[in-house]
Length: 383
Ligand SMILES: *Cc1c(COP(=O)(O)O)cnc(C)c1O
Image (tube, rainbow, N blue to C red; front, side, top):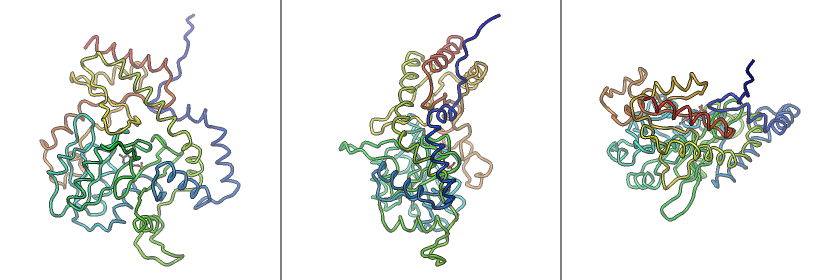
């Protein structure tokens, strides 16, 4: 008989471990909503918007049903017309580009910076035409895009900037003058998601919009609620996209822990960085000088062409790993109408073959980190 000490099973994101920690606080938050039965527009929604406003140091927070809606509502509120061009990155989650296409706007993709994975200001400049109306930077994997440069371009060309903050709620951009601002509060509008696996996640779907502009804020609020200005008076064509009270109550609990959780992610990233520092086949995530990194994902680049073999090796060791993102958006069937070719976007195509995201969440234990790191290194001893 062998006795195995059982390490906790490793997950990409361990929502269960988090619930074990916060359970009693979450339970009582949920219970109080159940007792009030104010499921839509209950007081917790406003409390959460105010708490988040305070945390983000932004003038307005408008909650909504999910991050994809947030992006869509942002574009609707800016009054963009079919054919208006929107420049974004080809290396992101589909939601970013989906809403552009849905609204009949012209999607203009760009190759990202190969080191930070974020949208490249030089590529934005090349993509600008007289019809360009907006830039959508995505703060990918938890690190801010180069917002200072992006805002300069936007000012020069009179463009809107919609920040996709879904993966970076809580990250801070550091301007060249040392000023620190939260991701999502620098552009015209910021749009985020509270999908359960995000750094600030609820127990279902949720999202929010950020802006410092009063007129835009009231437009966002109207559109998210059927375009209603006063009761049964409709000023805008809107959508039904509200954050429900249960989710707001859960977020009210979790927001208090966001910085602590992001710090724990950073500590896990530091561990990985150190473990892989001497491995020539791995490039660890580049930390840009002008942003904090809150490690929504810890994404390495596998440089010896064996990414998929490594992923299989890890799976056999019961270590999940994910490829974000396996296919460039311009080659997706649904987006063939854009007319991009197979050989376009060399940086994106290369990244799609190299990247691998390792387990990353605030509850990774030292023992788990040690096991993951040694399993990765063991693979490269043989390859
Ligand atoms: C998760 C995500 C979204 C969409 O958020 P949902 O709440 O799932 O709609 C948008 N953009 C990016 C980059 C994301 O990671």
